[in-house]
Figure 1: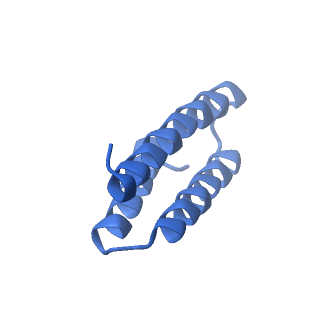
Figure 2: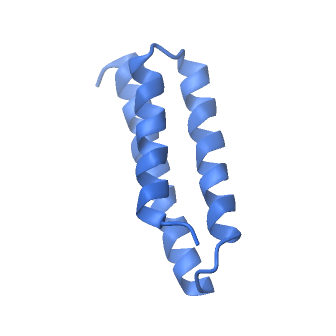
Figure 3: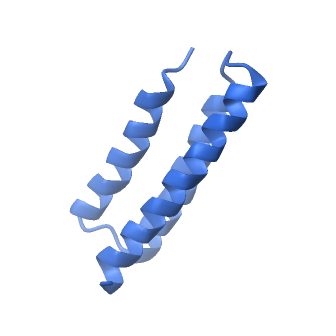
Length: 78
């Protein structure tokens, strides 16, 4: 079974590392989409209950939105 918090933190760190390594705007946005979908797939394939899976996916959607804001701020300021 996956450790959800580890998966979520890895998603965040991977995207932030890309920004630190000067990924381009489109690459960062695409990376956010790909990492989000990957995490959703990991959750779907886990042994968590359906209720837990839905809660994790809602949390991941908030993470994706926050990271999208971080990307926008990184490239376009406030």
